[in-house]
Length: 125
Length: 180
Image (cartoon, rainbow over all chains, first blue to last red; front, side, top):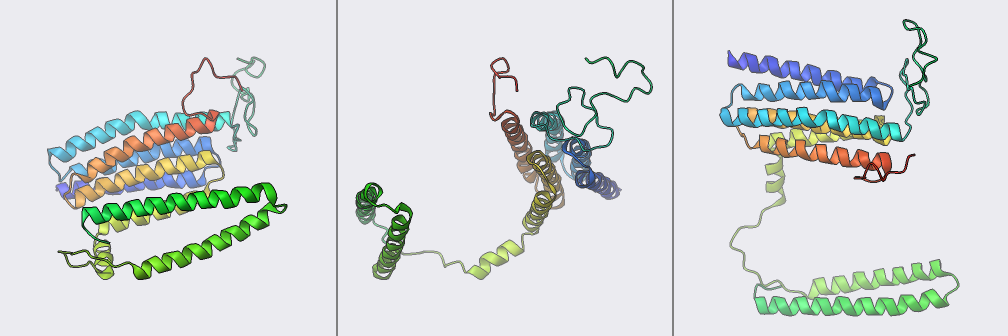
């Protein structure tokens, strides 16, 4: 029974990580690639690591919990610093519908398309 | 080559003296060239070639004349044995293969340095997952210690590299930073 649970967890983790890597390959620019890298890969690694705890003892479980807590703390910070560096270097936003209200990056609109909110295109924060 | 400490000390001092003499000789020859010669690049190239020939000759002479007086108590390990030890270590082979694939994909697809950072971060995350699987499959919990260290290191290196990428310094004081 526990072997089945471990197998299912490994398959789910591999599927999620494959989606993340596919997103990194397919998305057009850094900012959208960070979505795939920061969320999908972290969740996939978490599921994979928990699949390893199913047959193991408490030492494995303690280490896995430590690693997962550490990754949950550090992965968003790392993704944020990468995005900040890319924004400081004015890397272009190639995704369709990208909005950069400070007008720093080429390729992005400077204001949201004011469909639902009138006055959004005239007020600059 | 010997195992005796006195002989080794003699060898080391002779090596140091020889290196110092060679450096003095080099500086005398090269510095006189810098002031005097009119075509500096060609004369330096010629000097380098002469030095390469002399160095290879001296290396061959010392290789031919040196004698090794070392007693081994273990049988020498053949190349075949070390290759076999690497081949039978399946987790190591898997790790190396996945790292090679990830690095290849990363450097062929990425257009900017920030995208390479994203790809490197993801590759390290995948290695952490792979180490977890290795630890579970071969019942070695200490592979998870390596995964833990890898997680810490990847965070620090990613943050330092992207800070350096953004404002050319890894650590800045926010109030002293000039606005771009």
